[in-house]
Length: 442
Image (cartoon, rainbow, N blue to C red; front, side, top):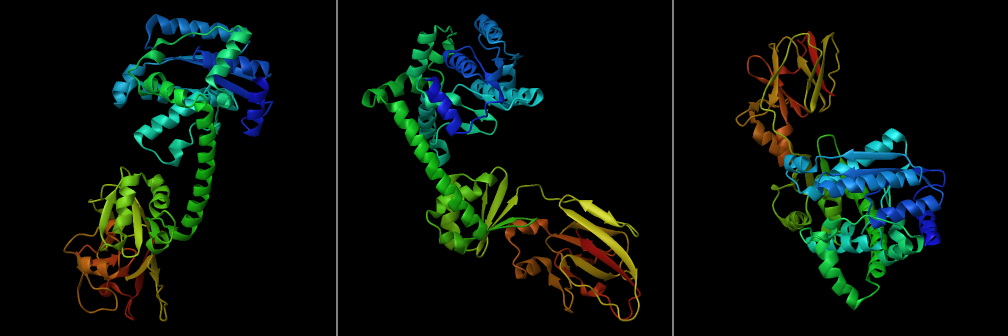
């Protein structure tokens, strides 16, 4: 078994022979085998043990056992006593989820502080089978069917090459002692029910189930890599990232194979579920304006693109720009001003990100605020009034970007600039203008 694990470590580049590891040891059979295997392979490691405060004297005995195990291997020993139930109640999560979050955060903290190359855990083939079935039960995509990866960030799993019976054979052959955790037999936990009630039935059908599912996980992982590359290629063509939003080209998305699957992968960083993604695909042929929301973002189906923006409260407050003030920073908006004395032949700069305004027509202080229903202005080059809502429609501003439109308002209530779009005709630079206020959006 040692040779098998050594080969697995090398094939998956889990760590180099000179690396020192932090080994997570609960005291159970799996982690005891992991510590002994690494010791026999000549790997230098420290031992990390979590006491979750859930099993009274039994947990205390586990901690003492692991402490002595670390002494046996002459390994540095680290232990943390958690208030798991209190943390679970505070966060509104199960004790299992709380324990997982606490231990991995602590493992990483110890790894960083002590300079270990990686954190080794004792997951094996049976854990992969349990994880795949549990994910399948809850509903999952490819990511949930590749099981437990040999390496993920600073986490490494050297025992994924071996089965649970292999581990039993190893402890018998090497006369190792371990601690049994009674909670592993409790049917309260979903994973235990799978382990105790479901998997034995499946192993009657296929005695090599753990190995079979491990191979399946490997094949799914390879398929996932193919999908990942295809999604990256699609993103390079169909996705455009701008400061205010992310845009996805609908026409290009429609040409992809398995559109909903590809779009879901593109939308995964924005928190959209697969079911919502299917609704988004159904909206491709609908009228513009359909809105979809995830916990963190909103997406609007525009004419020929999807527009994704972070969900945030609209800024209803206003901000003043005093005479002589050179900069104004608001969440998502940064303005700089420059006052210029001009002479004949001044060339008025153009561009959506700046406005050249007649400084002597402006009344200070200027106000910067979000646009509001009922706002109107006179777009430069026009003599008549234009409702700002109509102007934004003419500019084809997506629904979820309209909340990000700000206006610069003179103290007499006149809009001088729809920021990022068009100045007002009443503040344009003319032959009579002597001073120009140049306002730039940075």
